[in-house]
Image (cartoon, rainbow, N blue to C red):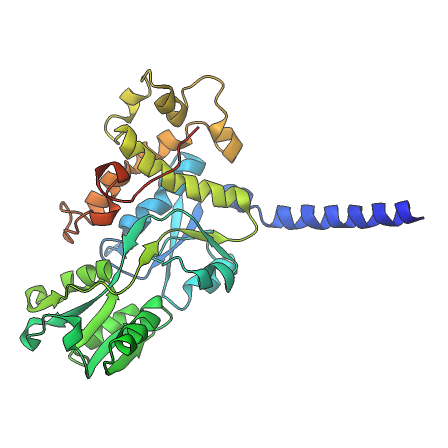
Length: 341
């Protein structure tokens, strides 16, 4: 009798697990519909911004393309859902999008209060302040009493409050839900200061009527590690998104570029051959549930990490952001990826 009851309980648990596992298979869902649905910013220069025809481009967009390349071998098999800071997590949790790549900071609260998972950090940022040069302000410590524009539903709000409290400074927060509203309020003079991630300040200044009238103050008041996020409960999809990110960094370490990736398939280096899917008996791709050419397809489609950074954010882009912490670990930065083996 006890054995029968125990067997029934185990069988029911197995069925429940199997059912939840099937419903959680994002890879199967993505393959069935034929594209990756990627949650991105509503419009942030350098990260995700649509042109007049609605075609998205940017650093985050290239990560969406990298996942599409890994799954389909085609960077074009991706669709974009523009999300603001308030709607981004509900959209991912409710399966409106398959992953979120939206300059989103990885925090303990987002790991625990939301059913989300982060792992790979694709951009190390920090919060800063932008002011009009006419204010003659040289430091954030001179901002007591200022009206400060900030976006709701972001880590920026809490960082701002903590910074001013710890320095015994007063301020007047001017809070908006949409990024476009924050931009408009600052440019119209409703607030003295604009605060967000420093990369966002560079992007915002770029699209202002008179960019040279504004300056970014030197203080960095927080750690803002950005990276793709997926739903909890689907380890396979989590691994695919994570290793698509790591592939970009490993490719730069190997010296593999979008231009030479075909030539590099003939390398005698077993690590490179394994990475590009030409090493005999390697199951790295199939273990992910992908073709063994998954990493080759990513680099062929978008290039390596350095190329993605330079094209969208770096000195060759309108933003002209220095690599800094986002340089490879071998070159003084902290971008580092586990080995593909």
